[in-house]
Structure formats: C-alpha cells, structure tokens
Length: 345
Image (cartoon, rainbow, N blue to C red):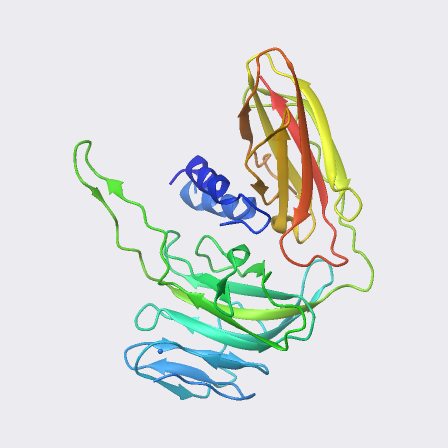
C-alpha cells in the first residue's frame, strides 16, 4: 500500500466528525518511515489476567473489571513484574498532562483475538493506548465502547512505541464503560499477483498487542505550544501561494484565495502540540465540500514532511478555499497551533 493509497482510504472513510478512520498523518509518517521506510473471566479491583488454554489474553486493571472473550480461559493474577510493554501505570505528556492507567490487557498471537476492559468513568477524558510486537502490516484491533465502534480510537500501524487515541463514545454521566479491542474485525482487500491471475485475499498476519485505557487530567490552564515552522516557498515543483495560521482554542476557521495556472492546487497542514494528530479539517473548494482531512503533521526538524492533498480547480481562475477545524475527543486546555498552506503549479 502506498502513502497515496492509504490517504485515499482515509478520505473515503472521513465523511463526518466521527469518521470511519481518523488515522492521522503521524501514522502516515510512521508507515513512510517503515516502507521507505477467552469460560469468561472477571475480577474485582485487584489485578487479574485471563489465560487461554492455547494462548494468553492478559488483563490487569485499576480499579475496573475485565472480561476476556473466547473459549477455555481461566483467571490468574498478574504479578507486578508482569508489566505490559510500553504502557506505564502513570506518565506525563509533553504538555504536562498527567495520565493514569485504569486497565491493561494483552492479545497474543495465538488464541483469543479480543479483550474487553471495564473501567470506572470519573468524568475525566479517556484515551486508549496500544503497543505492538509484529510486522507493520498486521491486523490492528478495532475499538468499541459498550458495543459501539469508536473509530476515532483506531491505531495504525503496528509499532513498539505507545500510540494514544481518544475515546469519544463514553456516555456523559456514565460510571463505567467497557472498552473492547478486537482483532477479528478485518478490513480485507485482495491482491492480484499476476496480470491475469485471480485476486486473492491474503491472510492477515498476527501480532502481540498490549492495550490499555487511561484517564487524563486536563492542565489547570491552557498550554499553548510553540509556533509552527513556516512552509517552504517551493517544494517538488509546487509554489506556496498562501497560508493561514492560528491556535485551536480561538481560531477555528480560515479562508484562502489563490490562482492556479495548471488547474491543480495542493493543501497541507502543519501543527505543534501533543494533540495535533486528533485534529480534523473540513475543507470546501469554491463552495464544494472536499474530503475531510484527519490529523496534522508536526515538523520539528529534518526535511519538510510533505503530505499534500491535491484538488482539481479551474485553470487560471481564482479559487477560494475555506476550512473549519476541530478535534476528535476532549482537548480541554490542550490547544494546538495549526498552519494551512496552499501550493500551486
């Protein structure tokens, strides 16, 4: 799958503020770097795990309960030394936000393919976190809350670094929520290995997934991140024709007017802030809705991480691009600085 293929899939599924797959550009960057880079078991407030006869689905929690779906499982306590890879009990994000792990589980390569974590809901924002030991192309867990798919919490691709995503479907006033991570839900496609050969659906590869639910405490005051780096004036045959910038808690829209001799324009986004990957951009070109853009690149050093979305426009005519900006999940006192650039040829 090329970067453009992945972007096209994201566009097709991004039709509403709770899109089919808001996998953002930080995930795209991760893929670029790699290719060019279950009886049921529950427990109380102590740490527990569910161990399948042929494989393990491990669960520990604080202070919720856990259910490990699938046949032939038993419950056993996990020791403090049996820690999930890369999912600490507590940590502080770059903007000073304090995170506390509520429950944790493991889906191993063999055996049960999903795990459910029931966690207390205090009213603070909830995130899911995952790490993965396997290949980049493995099937990733789909996340649901009380049986409803929370597509905003999808993580791609498999990686050892912890990925955090917001839980958006926790009902206001609820006292607990059950979050299920399920690798049996597969988005399948076929591959034609020969020009006139059959299109064969490959068997998804397996991996070990460590999953967790965290709650976080918003900072007492807004933490405004550093300014965004300027877009390059020229890159890969494109010339910068206009840009707009703002801070998400006070600037939620933009308008740019440009002219393209070639009939094509390219739009890109750059951001700073810990929640940049959770942003969405609703775009209109000459009054017509364009596919919503999910996520925002963070450029701190190295080459410009170009991820231009290209639009066809009338040749030589003035083109008006408008946009609205928002977030998936809670973002209290965690604003993002954003910048939008429009390129022409």
